[in-house]
Image 1 (cartoon, helix red, strand yellow):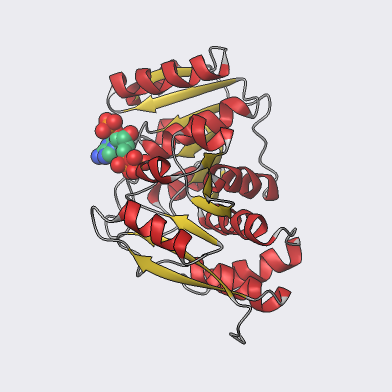
Image 2 (cartoon, helix red, strand yellow):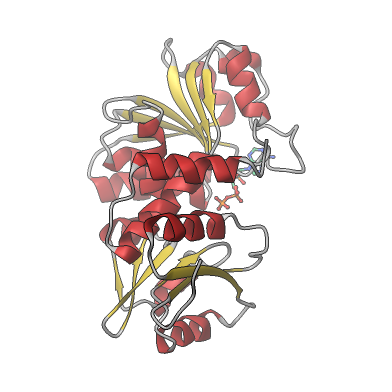
Length: 287
Ligand code: ATR
């Protein structure tokens, strides 16, 4: 990679940032596509987020990704926000515009593209979604806005599922999200579902944790999609496979959220061939 006077800088702001795979995504693409762009991690300490965004603007940074714990807090520092990101209430990508940054949520479009690349459809589907935290809430909104028939939102705490369902249904204007407790899976219609695992349960190092351990639950799943990608195969995925379903981890979601951010920053379309080259590089970090 040649860094010269025309090189533009992008980066990741969050805390922590040292384990990020995003530099692999963006620097590989910049090199392959010949863009004068470099991507670096920036650790932002608690209480310094607004300063960081102001400083980035002053330094004319082309764009930023935003990760934990700043995806909601960053909204206050934006000049403009995309509608999807606004409705989700979380921003993971900033794009430089005249006078400040515009915020986007490429996590959810990334999940959508990752599922599409595996032939998994949302439109018209009945979907089981596990969890009601920030990530699951965004997935609930994605499913609703992409035309899912019903989303059965199963959560340990029913009240949180009810809150998410209420918010998303109100925004979408139809009763698509159905809040339930984890044990309520026995009440689901007798058929097979796409299930999305949207909690951090099962994340390394607690790889044996799973939200629902009951085998009977997994017999209801034809396809399982876990947002987690470390470990490469979660216990949720293993249980789906043991019961005859197909299972996918969240690495392609990470890939495509990055690709969509790259496309926004550089005003290009990244080909599937280039996407797969990046994916192979990312995968090498796991297997
Ligand atoms: P976020 O996406 O906001 O980062 P998270 O903290 O990763 O969310 O995960 C929160 C979700 O995981 C919640 O749905 C939580 O259930 P509660 O709403 O009942 O707290 C769920 N969760 C966390 N630990 C769990 C466990 N041991 N069993 C079942 N669900 C759990």
